[in-house]
Length: 386
Ligand SMILES: Cc1ncc(COP(=O)(O)O)c(C=O)c1O
Image (cartoon, helix red, strand yellow):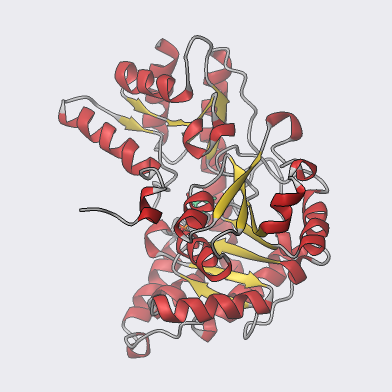
């Protein structure tokens, strides 16, 4: 079956490919440990599940959802943003529900890009920052995130011709896959650049609640002027162990959110309102302890992985946020993909090759911390024996 030209422009989805290889190994009888996908292994916090159970039994959630999002959810998001980030949002015009950040970011591309337009995308970055523009018929232009700049893009390196065509910019801190937190002053520089060039900044805030060592991640919208030029996509997937629920919000610039709504009302029918009520329960202050306890688990795993890598003489930077460790590929391998193949073949461990997140990820690999401690320890021991 011949796919559209748009679809032909994008490579197969990274994680689907990784899973296929791991499955083939498993079928061959290998005890494969996957440190590939960032999908929390711990259940959704109990109060959220209880709220969902009540909501499912409530007939008011059984009809088509409101496409803007149920009022309780939008109000909970606004209250959370004020309490957590000091950002005041109008739940009527500055908050909308989304069926996960991935859906939302993809649709933002459709809402704002025409053929010939450019979307500036962090490289390495979450794959939808490049697949989205391509599927919208536009062009992703990569902004390299390099270790020596603290994984900040060099805004001055973006050429004037590209800036002129740029309509969107995708940023993400705490950052997947590098684990970096936002370098001081970056958000302010981004606001100034976006203002000068009429760019809509899309800050993907998937990991703000997953941080360590006393680091508290800010919202992009807390930057002066950010709401004039940007939106933030806040996902409940990682911080609340809710990847399966598909629950996120897009917040910020009211004009941009209105266009997102215009697009979305033609594309889908919103997310199940019982999920939104569960999301509202997740954002209440009494859930903060669950989030803290979860972060303690990830911190322990992070330390375990980083210590093992350091012992194996891998020069790893200990991340202050996210559920990932990003480390350089040992010498002697032609590419990150070659190293990851080797690790799967010889150790039965799935890790992600950095190049799959963009060319600037080449030379690195990513370990996800979403595996129970015993399995993580076993995987790390296997890596050390390689
Ligand atoms: C940076 C980033 N954004 C978005 C997502 C997807 O979030 P959601 O589950 O809300 O679609 C992920 C998932 O790995 C991610 O790493």
